[in-house]
Length: 248
View 1 (cartoon, rainbow, N blue to C red):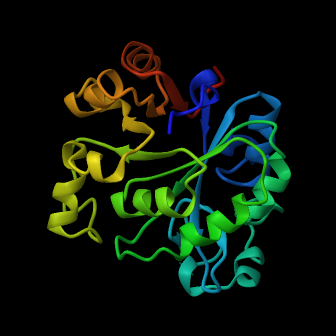
View 2 (view 1 turned 30 degrees about the vertical axis):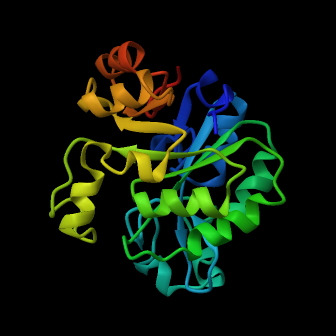
């Protein structure tokens, strides 16, 4: 599937347009509303709840952004929605609620978080939600197995691989040595058949994303752009940036 032009037409707000100093926390409804107001695509993360719902949250545990603790996959939707983001009155959204809020006004770039255990429940729920959503949306993941799941369960939506150059045991403890090797240099490329690549900005240029972009025609997003130097690097080597901490 050819990645749509809208994927790279506008900068992508990393976890929405957030600014903690103004009480707008990443992935919360106000961050999504800010991105919509600026006409920026929204990059967001989803995690699985104990009762099988896709929750919009980056971390797999509570605490960094909220006043509670514990693993998301051990808590129900009701329990998670009772938790407030720090110093705000807002709570975590489900993917369906995010889709309702956005209503197709800007693209969604949805990162599927993974425990590298082959579990497809999260992508299955994502597929159910997106089946009734008409707005522009793509899925992506660091985990090649989840990209395969996106290709099989949501074939009508473009899917991408999120990648970087090195995968250490310390940084990726849930992935096996074989999985980490498969992720390195996009070795899985012909198996996963991604429609686009999202690569770590500080590691550009790199051979694997160059080949994906220039030989196989995969648009290249780059994350997370925060500084002027990173912005220059993104403009030089990628098709669009996933940004945070400023307004382009």
